[in-house]
Length: 80
Image 1 (spheres, rainbow, N blue to C red):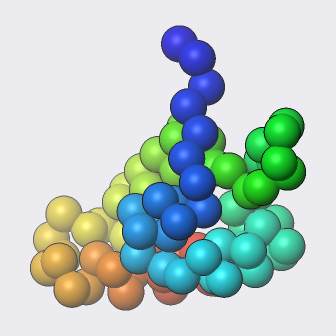
Image 2: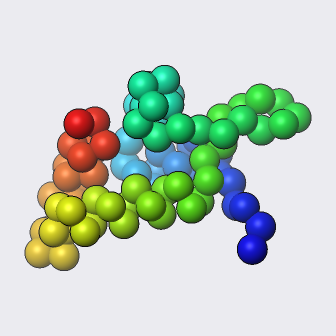
Image 3: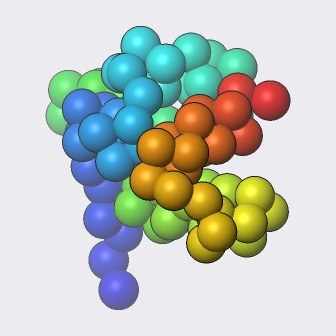
């Protein structure tokens, strides 16, 4: 399967954070971005995002959480 990449705007929407937060996470090594070969924009691997989401779900027990709590837990987990 080919590597699928999405834009920073799409990734921020999926994770429920701002693009600036994703830039900071990239800078701090919390969620590394790849660079588009033609324009050098940040892009994120769908696989990397799936790993982050899976890790959050398994470690934080989100199955028992409400939708509003999930967003808070995702943000809190990645910033730690």
